[in-house]
Image (cartoon, rainbow, N blue to C red):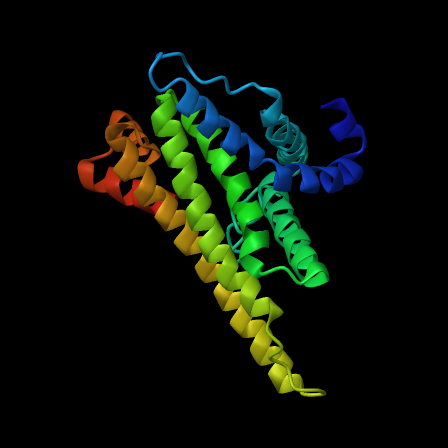
Length: 239
């Protein structure tokens, strides 16, 4: 944590390969799940295979927390990013760094885009599994939630990165460049929305009343909101 605070830029750059390698954590959880399928022993979420996830998550979480504490929330009147904290923007930026690294890797090696996006999917799977585990879900629920998150991330990122790799510009054409940029921006926005929506629905289907969506809904009810108000806030916050 101290290194991240003292060297935020270097730490952030170092967190990119750690994040992309964190998919090994999901493989470890699956293997453990198979080994303990009959003996009832709990899965260990703290093996050495989880270290890439913990390293990247600790670095990024520490820096994001420091930024949120240091800077005020962005004015609500600003489109898209209004109401977000500096730390939230930082987290978005690290996600973009991960995608850029995969794009560079795919371009440099000539590997199919699906290979690169699988790295992003693996990272998403491990993160979602840990999140579900920390919410008190069973090991099988945590793994299932993580796997679905990984599948959605891989699929939707593939569409985005595959489009970036296609040569769509005609030489010297500003109109073509602007058109391609606008198209990519639309794809990126759609990818983020669809990934969030798919993860929310998967979480609900797998975990039911223990899902994040239902937890938020019950929390709003406990705060005194009506059923309709709680539902509106829940779905608004989820998407």
